[in-house]
Image (cartoon, rainbow, N blue to C red; front, side, top):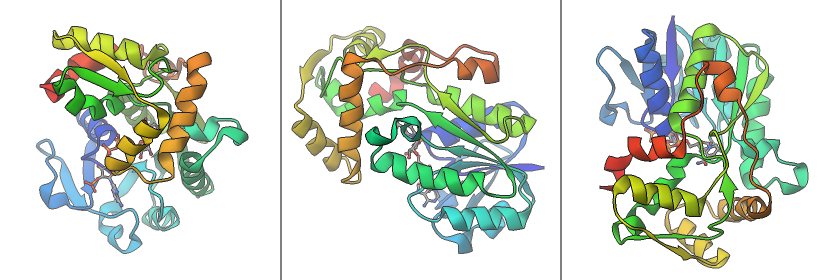
Length: 278
Ligand SMILES: NC(=O)c1ccc[n+]([C@@H]2O[C@H](COP(=O)([O-])OP(=O)(O)OC[C@H]3O[C@@H](n4cnc5c(N)ncnc54)[C@H](OP(=O)(O)O)[C@@H]3O)[C@@H](O)[C@H]2O)c1
């Protein structure tokens, strides 16, 4: 049976695709525009918009498992189409934001919570992945790194930055085994690491010095909006960073429990992405 990987151009989606192909699975990759999607040999590709149910039938035909991105809209249409197609298991990429105490939950939690509810109420088996902050967020530093600087608010915020390959390995294992039905899995990297420490590791891996420049929260929000972030998101992110200055975000051992391998370190991530900072 075929496994559908939505968002196959995305950081996590691409890594899921590669993990499934490496495991010898029959995989179909989707994007809103499959004509410009680059996939490994032997992988079928299809255009599908998760926010437009009328585009989903071809993508879901003959599919047993789905790796699903959370989108702000359309999840009910995805669930209905997947049920109609006879999908057996959906692994949803959600967020650790939904695991925060209710008082600390913002817009990010709300949109992921809605997707979690729709998927877990469906007739197929489902597993929710709740990763904390991605190591790939550091890619937003690229332009500054080219100038020899890292600019961030709350440089001493300590997050459990997770490698996209660890999220992908968990998703692939579950889609192959059909395991962890009904579970929500909090995923993190191996240790809390501050932005200051990430900048130091990156400088070491790139072999050039990086000066750290602290931004105010207002400056950071302005930059996030300029990068195209939805207006309601930056404040939630900054609130979360602020909390982890005094109390590092907790890390879990779930990646190891599911895959049998220790989660990759931020240094490993930086080495894997050296070319992205060239
Ligand atoms: N960044 C974090 O720290 C963090 C933490 C926890 C959870 N998350 C979750 O992870 C997600 C980001 O994952 P990522 O880094 O892999 O993202 P990414 O690299 O930005 O990729 C996003 C993918 O979503 C696809 N997409 C966008 N709109 C779509 C639509 N309407 N229909 C179908 N596909 C659509 C895009 O594909 P096409 O453009 O090819 O259609 C793209 O491949 C966040 O949105 C959030 O849900 C992120």
